[in-house]
Image (cartoon, rainbow, N blue to C red; front, side):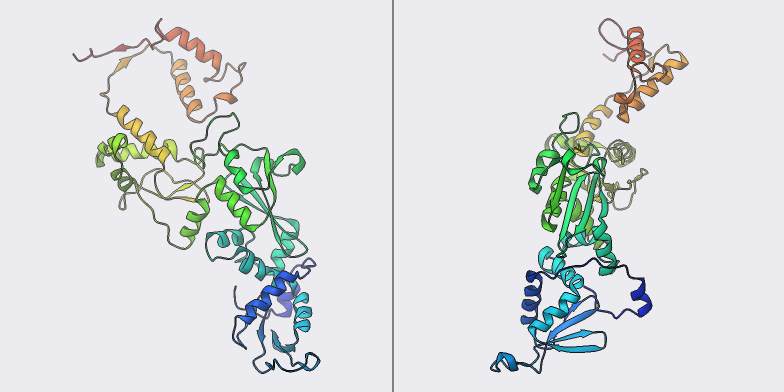
Length: 402
């Protein structure tokens, strides 16, 4: 919480109308508890004002009707002595600021990734309570990978969150499968829309058709971290300047067993190989993370790291597994083959490779034979170029080594 300020009349006039908020008893009780834990005179700060126990009015033996003012409310330059009832009335008039404090200090709690993420969702570190509550009344939408998260506020100042696939933005809740337990997300992220296993949870292959329509702050955070594990944590570390990045060479040096073969890539050709790996696996079309690891501390890769909102701090298991396979394939001795291809057939082979690499095969219509990767055109090319054993009928220009 920033220190309270007294906005000028001009600035106050620019503030949007705050939705009417009721001060819930749990928020008021939390204020009393917080004041009880402070020394008299030590303020509890909100946006625009502060409250403290009266250091001079602490007569516990006085009759209730004669009890001195117990609290001091500092609103700009107008300190006010208040009883507990008077404090409740005063805070009710400032319920937005009080419930905002309560939401983050008591409901969300810890000064860590959960708090930072939930504040980021509503720009709590860059906008006033009045501006945020007006926006929350309409619904604040944020993107997180393939997720669309909508934050709203109730009449009691409570945050509620709708978490769904971005493709389902605007779809009525009744038309989606609704869940209320954030751990149900574990089943939603297992398979893609075609029922295939998703080995990489940050791949842009998350299936839609579901919604968590009414989560509280802690459950919303849990759902996001279940769908995209450790993304909020690493995002927070990066914001705090504490992201520990492990580059390619250091990661590969740790590999052992069947994965130890990756270490055979040396600094020369190995650097170029790692560029190919990053281009193949770490592009935005393949992973929603933003790659922050490079070849080593002193050598950046030539491939762009992507635009994802959450960082990738080290080569993941999918990258390591793929690199192991490519290391073995690249260890083969190259040979030169001759093929008789028309210029159109050469272009068609290029189109087939591009379509498979970009995952566009299913988008190509069967009747569209103008497209190089069309299924019938590809089958025709196979019929023409493959031998009876299913091998591409090329002629090696050099004999096999004995």
